Length: 138
Image 1 (tube, helix red, strand yellow):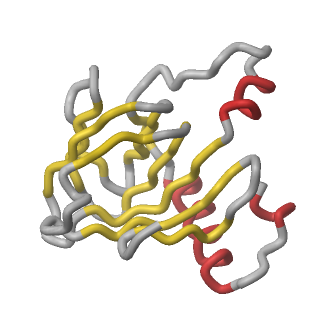
Image 2: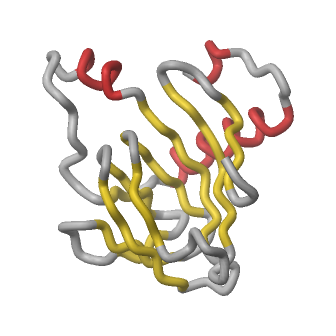
């Protein structure tokens, strides 16, 4: 990780982290996601995933990334891209999808206020606990 990314919870099933990247940072323009990833934005940012229409992601829209997916990022909010992310193990996803390699069918999904609250509570729990209970997270 680097100065813009922090892993809050590493495990073999799921990792949880935060990303705070100002528009002028070298990582802001985009890159490639290596694993299944769900990002819950805290600021508005336009994301253009390979093969999908651009989306303005904000706290009401979670971004869904498939492994090895490239993306571009464009500033909307002057703070840049601030989000929490969840990286999900591909083998675990295959186990819950009848052994087939799992792919997100969409680039994004709406986030209910209840889901956003639960996600925020989990992130705050992880930030406040150096040794979080894996049962709580997974």
